[in-house]
Length: 245
Image (tube, rainbow, N blue to C red; front, top):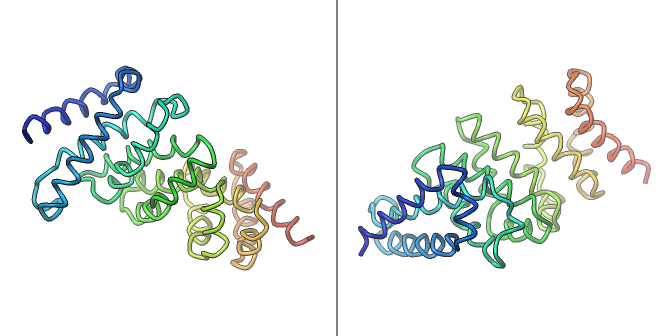
């Protein structure tokens, strides 16, 4: 009964709105049910021609509930295998959400999940998380842009991301662009990303070729924010070591 499923999904979304309910949702196996309901909605929606059909729209409510759980719970404590319940729904929200708030929530949730370990980050990137974050950067909403670059920064330290950065000038250019942002949290994420990616000599060489050292020195000269300076100095140190070798 689709109406019953819609009601269940809507209730889950409302329950997850209160942070106090998110831990119990994990403990009481709510993640598995949300994943199953999301999958049913995706199947119905695809079978009926996509979101325009208005069929299976409970898919979004399930994905939003999962995003809210992921924002404020510790992913390392999820039941075995449950973490991957989040991956596709949250990535789908980046492009399929009906409201920018839901994109923002998905970005926050995915950023938290990406903090677990390199293996998790590889899975996220393989499932399209990096490309989906790049799409968020074109949003007209600055907060959506910010969460996009923050999530990308959290995804950097894994084999799949570093392979991509070693062969993609465009991704590095995005980090150099957002490193000059007026939004401080956006700038912190981008400069932090540059500090991490330049630990890989292959990526550091690309940053140098794209005049990243010049950009970083300009940022250093123009800021007194100690958090930004720590990240910029770390990136410059990595670039200097790359030149030396």
